[in-house]
Length: 196
Image (tube, rainbow, N blue to C red):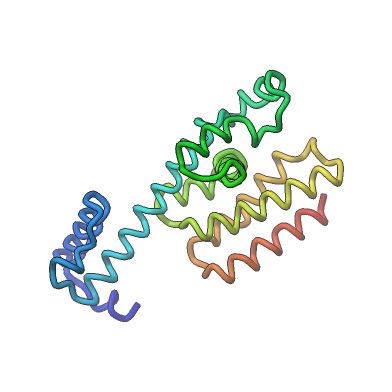
């Protein structure tokens, strides 16, 4: 962080941003072809992380659409196929993403949680403020809370509880370390589960 604080010129920041954009567009990291100083490299990494967070948010939205997990399609898909919501489209998704059906089911489940239950977290991810690791911790907490809501029989308040969870974790997700965010997610799940 000290190096980032010393980089004051907008020209250096613009160069770092261009380096990150070039790295993403070409698949080449500029380190192997051009000399890049530590400050420029840190700025490029920061920009690249924002681009990757945005890409993960876009991927989640596409996974939900590809797997047929849009909220309005869920009851119809379950009626037609007789399969669980997460299984709908998993085989096709697995083939496209080059992963097992079980892994594709998990990816689809996480994407649905992010896009439908956690719109604020999704917004921070799309803005590049929350990365994949933090989003994974948050969606894991959302899944746990979902199970606890089902067990408690409080299904009527599912949407409200998830909205409260989303608000609780989204406001701190960008500024907390991954380890601290994990604890925050755990506390939020416990608090909301006991309040139900």
